[in-house]
Each structure stands twice: as C-alpha cells, then as structure tokens.
Image (cartoon, rainbow over all chains, first blue to last red; front, side, top):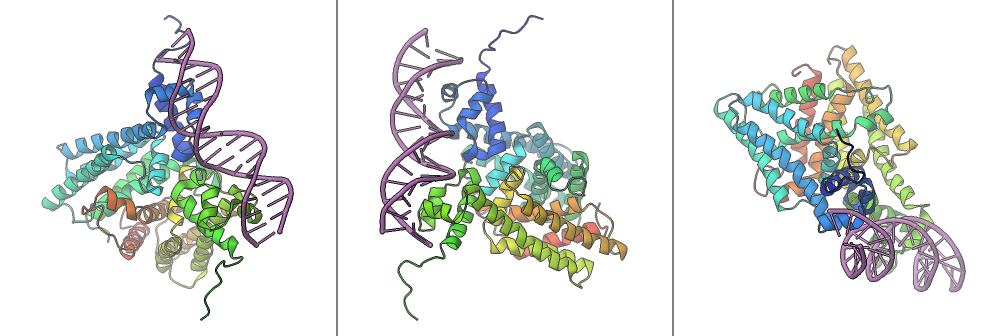
Length: 209
Length: 209
DNA sequence: GTCTATAAATAGATAGAC
DNA sequence: GTCTATCTATTTATAGAC
C-alpha cells in the first residue's frame, strides 16, 4: 500500500462538514467560529467560502443531514411489515442509532430546541414533519388494530426524543456533576433505549395514564 | 398615584439581570451580546461592568438563581410530611412551576446540557446535586415503605426533566413546524405535568418496566 | 482547489469625566 | 451610579494570486 500524498487533495468539503459539526455541537451556531472550523479541517477560511455560501449555509447542511437521516429511517420503519409494537420499538431504537452515529446530533438538537428552531429551513422542516407523520401512521395502525389506545403523537414523541437526547448529551456532564453518585453512574445506551421503549409501549397499551 | 420619574434610578442591576436572562435564553451565552443586554436594560455597557465583573459572571448569576430556586423547592418537598407518591407529584409540579416563573429557564437549561455544563460553577453544581439528593431521599422513603420499586434516580430524573423542558421550550417551535397538526396543537401545561407525574409514578409503582 | 492578505463589523472590556 | 469614548481582539466574509 503506497503512502498517501502529504496533502490529501479534495475531500476538503467533507473535512469541513465534519469539523463544523464538531464545532457547532461544542459551541453552538453563534459560538462556533469559521476560523476554528478551518483550522480543525486543516484548511483556511477561504476554502470554507469556496464550498459554502456562508456560515449559515454550512450549518443548515449539517441540520439537514441530521434530520434527513432520522426521517429516512423512520419512514422505512413505518412502511415495514412489522407489528405496530415492534415499529414503536424500532422508532425509539432508530432515533438512538442515528444519534449514536452522529455525536454532534444530540447537542445540536438541544440547541435548536432552545433557539426555537431559528436556523431550520424549509427542507429540514419537511424532515421533521416526516418523522412525525411516520409516528402518526404507526399510532393509527395500532389503534385500528385495537393494540393501541389513541394518544397524542406529540406527547409521545416528546417523551421519547427528549430523554433520549438528554441521556446522550449528558454522558460527560453527569460524570462531572455527580461522580460516583447515581447521576454519574454509567448508563448503558442499550439499557436507556430499552427503558424508553417500554415506557412508550406502556402508554400506548394503556398500562399507564 | 404620582407619575413615576422619567428615568427610574437604580434598579439598574435588576434590569440588567432581567435583560440578560432574556438575551442568553434567546441567543445562548456565546451568542448573547453585552451591548444588546445594555440596550434592552436601557443602560450602557459600562453599567454592566459596574455591577458585574464580566459577561461570564453575569451569566453565572442567572444560572445560580435558576438552579437555586429549583433546589430550594425540591428540598422543601423532600422534607414535607406528604406521602412519597405525593412528593413525586410535587417534584414534577415544582420543577414545572419554577420553569413557568422563569421563561428563560428551559432554553438556558437545554443549552447548558448541550454545552456539557461548561459555565456551571461550584455553587450551581451544589444546587444540582441537592435536587438529585432530594429525589433520592424521596425514592428511598418510598422504597422503605414498600410503595416504590427501587429504580435509578438518574433515569427517573431524566425522564421527568427532559420532557418537561422540551415542552416548555417548544411551545413556539411546535406552532411553526406543524401548525394545525398534532405537534402544533396547543398543549396545556397542566395536562403535560399531569402526564409526566403519572408516568413517573407508574415506573415507581411497577406498572411499567 | 488552495492559498495569503485584508476589509469591515462587532465583540468584551476599560478609562475617565461627571 | 451613570455616562461617552475608546482600546484591542475577534468575527464573517472577500479579493486576488497561483
């Protein structure tokens, strides 16, 4: 295998996106610096403006990828031949898996919520609506078959995604705020996902509320 | 009742704190501008540095007030003579009430989670630990009396606070992302609080998981 | 595609008058 | 306590050479 050339040419766009996702996750949109992104991508600022129209456009690309990936996965789950209960399990696990694949996803999601979705453009809005439409379809199917009570998709979705993002994003903080204590105790992702799956199904099957 | 003087003197510090809370909630710590805070408080930048050592110190004051208020309320709940189940209800309602009293609380909370608690100082850490200690005491009491199963306070707390902050913070976004749809449908705070109370108790009473 | 250099605006913070 | 004026660093973004 030949040694790669000293300056790896022209995956520069991908390097920028990766560096930007990390930067925006750590410091937010406003706090993120184009200069720092360039340095992390081993490029200069001008290259960022060669590939992207603006800092905002770069950020929107990352948002769109995040929500697009979740949308695609949820649409597949909703269209699958599984039972409604299994689809709910897959809904929870699917969001968790996309978050796991993108460490920047939970922090950026939390910040967008805090900002009132200020940077979310039309394409991303469509993805968000698509995710909710998928959940609504699953709930309808379950209700028609008598397996599920009718509950608000919004309440259910919030009860799933909020704790999920919280647990991903706080992995580091919990260690700091409560080392050794119950908050700091390591929580396996699989255990948290299983817990949230059971909580969601309990609501749908009328074991609670 | 006499007309107030044109320039109300020397509640300037309080005006700064109020304006800063709004600014940091809307734009985050990094995105918040001392200039804008001064303008919103009808003062100049120099007055902010007269009252506070730095932008960071001003922000920490707001964080401390938020978490201090929750800590105080939860400590009172834990020490009250109510039943464990009622204490859990009061735990959920208490956090909701403090968030209601401070519109900046949910957005700032979400951002701090996203930032890994970067701006949280020792005093605020103590408040966070105090809240968790209160919850742990309630769970222990319930478990000793046989009313509660033993479950992780961290999981329970996350399942309470994350959806709560999510629903408060998304009141405006949901309207935008899904007007007329289930997400955009107005959700009464009382209904959301009641739902989360029942969800928490269902876990503790072994009806789920 | 990649770079250096720089423009133009805004940031946090301070000096010093009143 | 409150102000104006200003310093310095950093910001996003662009021009133009190669």
